[in-house]
Every structure is written in structure tokens, then in C-alpha cells.
Length: 438
Ligand code: DOR
Ligand code: ZN
Image 1 (cartoon, helix red, strand yellow):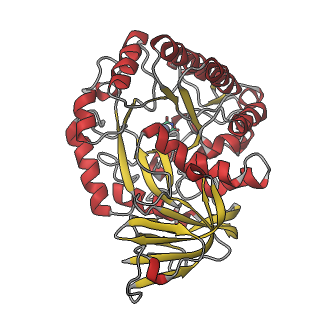
Image 2: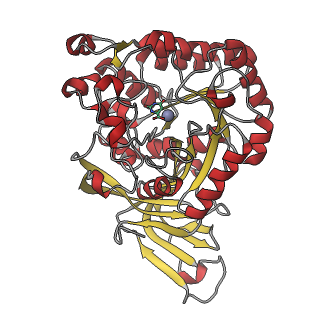
Image 3: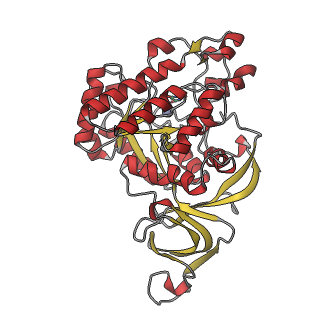
């Protein structure tokens, strides 16, 4: 099929484009981008226009398909929380054309059969490109490295023991060295489990008031610092996941200044919510790392603004009612985010923290660069992955409408501004708000 996307505001940070333009798509690729394309030009030549579907995108923003580099699909093992199919549908509805999924499934994605299984299931679902992230260590137990080369060959695009740090620093050193030798990213969950042991929320004034066991910010900071030190010493790259503290932001900022190859992501909840939200003991606000203080939130925003934090990722973490509807200390950590991530992030633009092109860069080009995948751009010749955004659309989050199998969003009922209204993956429309069920 041919598609002609007409008259949208095209923003493509990879090519420094921010202009009213048309995009022509044919055979799943972008074949032309420029002002005033006509139907006959969808293949770059004169030709029959009958099979071209023209979509008028006047007033819409058209960007490279969004990439979420930190998602939890729960398959295999926890299909009651999410499957690859339901997670894919949620991703498309949220405007994503590519997602990278973390290995903390059951069994853990520490071998090629799991990686291949995920890829096969994702292809069957056919809604979003799914890039498996394999475990750094077998069973993410922190004892011995997985077979990086074999996992790369099977289709894994990076390594992480997300949910925990690799505590053995010598092993972490080997992981960074081995991964860099095969040009693969390592994504670090930074947490010293002895400092965070038994904790349910950020350590501070609110935890004292509520009497909930605390997790100090330094539980994150010490591991961020350690991983930077190892990367600096070995001259390898390291990516810090879900940055939530002012301390982490500062360690990353100063390391970048010294030329360390460190990149970082944060999630929308860390620049939207603070530990104050926990006052009603709603377990939907329980995440790991925990929601921090206003000072941390401001530091994360400043990190996004000044480029210290490269990426916004959802850390979509689906959990069932039975995981969440229990006493706070026993509740699972995590909130779903695929279907709210974009709107929460657009608020940064409304608040003057980021320009719209900067935001799009953090949700497309930057994650593609870190994961080394040929995505995040609207260059002629690439797969036609495109997200169409209505910047003005006011909507109210209704978790019952979510495609995700889980409902654990603390944003249910919140009014949002801005939404992905069409998602196109490889030239196919995978989500269309006007149909609401494409
Ligand atoms: O809140 C979290 N949930 N943090 C993690 O690191 C893991 C995740 C999950 O898998 O539920
Ligand atoms: Zn995670």
C-alpha cells in the first residue's frame, strides 16, 4: 500500500527538520519527504495514484515512530499481567513503533530460546517492533555472565539485569568489556540492595510521617557512581536506567563532562510525581526506584533540559490486582506507562522544559542511537515508522480503555493534553484514534 501523509508539522531531529511537509510511504518504506508532494509521487516517480491512501494531517505533528527502550512484557511466565500481544497493542496505542523489553520474565531471558520466542510472538502480534534485552547474568542472579554473543545472534539488542544491580563489581567490569567488544549496550538498574533492603518508599520526611520502611536516595546514587567508575576505567559505554535522584543526575552530568560514555533515561513518573503521592497508601504509586522528593524531581527535569538525561522511557511495569491490592510493603513495584508516557512527557514542552523537537529526540532518535537500531528517523529509505500526534487533544485517562492487560496506573482519571492519534509501523496503520481499534 502507498500512503501519503499530507500537511503535518514534521519534526525529525535526526535531520533537523521542523516544517510543514508531506511524507510518501511505499512498500513499508519512506520514499519521499518534502513540501507539496502529490499522489503520483508516492513512489518518487510518476505513476498511478489509485492505490494511494492520502491522509490529511493538517494541525497534527508527525514524528519518527516513538521508541520505548524500557518496557516489561510479562511473557513468558506472567501472562496474567501482560502478554507480548497485549503489550504490543498498548505500545501502538501509546504512539510507539518500537519497544525494548526487559528480561525479568519467567524464565528469565538469559538464553537464545527465550529471545527467539519473544521475537516470534512479537512478529505474530505484528503491532510494534519488539527488541528483546537479554539478561547480563544467568537468571539475573549476579553470578555468571550469559552468552552475550549467542544472545546477540538470536536477536537481543542489549543486556540488563533490570530490577537489580550486578553486585559483583568485577563481573560488572567483565560485562561492560564484553558487551562493548561486540558493540552492545548494557543498561544498569542502579540499586544497592543492602541500602534499600526492606524499603517501600523514598527515605525522607514523608516516609517518617507515614511510618513506611525507607529506601534512601543513596541506594541509587552509589550504584550509579560505581557503574560510571567502571565504565570510565574500562572506557566502555554504560546506560543508566530510570534515573530518579538528584545525586544520580549530578554523577551522570559530571561524568559526561569528563567524556565518559554514559547515557541515561528517566521515566515520566519521576518528573511528574513525588513521594507526597504516597500519603493515601495507594500501591499504584509504589515503584522501584521509588518516587522521590520535589528536589529530585526538579533535578531530573534539569537533567532532561541540559541533556544529561538522554531518554524518556516508560518503565511500563504491568501488575495484576492480586499483586497490588495488598498491604503496601507486600505490593509489587511498578506502574504501567505505555499509554500515558507521551502525554505526561508533552507536559515538559508545555512547561518550557524542553522544545517539542528535543522531546521527540528523547523518545525516538536517542533511544535508537543507544540501542544501535536503525530507527528514530524519517530519512528516505528507512522503515516507515511514523507517529502522528494531536498536541491539543484534551483527554482523560481511563485505565479501563487501556490495551494493556493490567490496570495499575496512578494516572487514571487525570486530564491530559496531547495524544498519539495515529501510529504507523512499516507502512501499516497499527493504531488509529478515529477508529480507536485499528
Ligand atoms: O518498579 C519496578 N518494576 N521497577 C523495576 O525495576 C522492575 C519493575 C517490574 O518488573 O515490575
Ligand atoms: Zn524496569
